[in-house]
Length: 158
Ligand SMILES: CC(C)(COP(=O)(O)OP(=O)(O)OC[C@H]1O[C@@H](n2cnc3c(N)ncnc32)[C@H](O)[C@@H]1OP(=O)(O)O)[C@@H](O)C(=O)NCCC(=O)NCCS
Image (tube, rainbow, N blue to C red; front, side):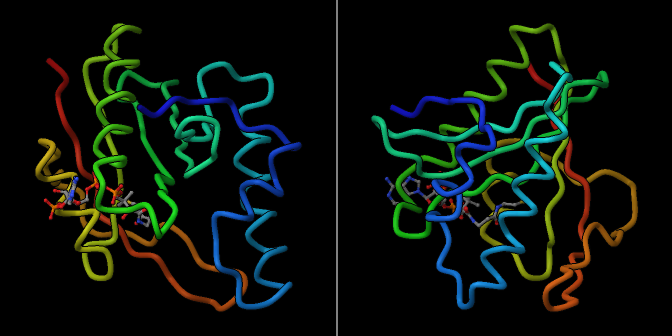
């Protein structure tokens, strides 16, 4: 069973270990991204950057912003060698349960439909549906200039 823990600056090394970095520069760049997400949660109890733990081991992360009536789940990541075992599904189900307990009725996430068919299929299977919003540029990687064009998906919670 997975559990969650709030990520802090002390977890940057642990977060780094989740990725196979090709260069030190890439690792630093990634750490800066984690730091940015952690900083967003400081003094803001509506935003959470969560470490995903299996027993006591960090196996991934997810960011949740419930500052609006539609809660936004972002940056879901499961360590590559532990995928396809149902952990991603369990995380999404758990986050939805947490949001329902807070009285939130709507979930949103964003996914790149062109290069991430696995995530898209998973979210669709779990009841997420594309919104009317057109595909938009979500992120430009400062390391390699790669662009992440995403669509929004939404789900009404029971
Ligand atoms: C997307 C992601 C989080 C999914 O995590 P995961 O732990 O592999 O998710 P699950 O195991 O729950 O589901 C993935 C697939 O494995 C299948 N699966 C689930 N349990 C399984 C099991 N015990 N044995 C075999 N397959 C299983 C699921 O049916 C699903 O397949 P399907 O969507 O074709 O039906 C993971 O691939 C990831 O971290 N990707 C990189 C980051 C990313 O793209 N994040 C999403 C941003 S939008």
